[in-house]
Length: 136
Image (cartoon, rainbow, N blue to C red; front, side, top):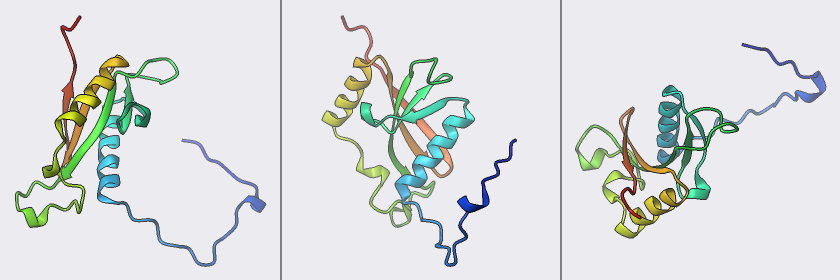
């Protein structure tokens, strides 16, 4: 734990503090996945350039190559009631098309990473990995 002190002229009090921004359902789900990956002691960076949400490293990204490209596939509550999905437009039941799935897994494979699809169920994260193997 460390403490940072800023020069007083850098700190400007706000007379009308605005409320913190509200997160969309997708952003909340990404935060849950990110927290779960950190809890598992992985280092995480953006996976945008490889078609995912996160690149996941076994340690310091300056030392290691990423092992996984993680893509958030949806979110849903533990309830099976369709009216209580809790995800607005971003819903688990929409799924992913075959071409999109193949594209994601082929990109990950071509950069020597495992494609991982993450789904948030309540506060739990479920992962499914896709890896091309045995192809020459």
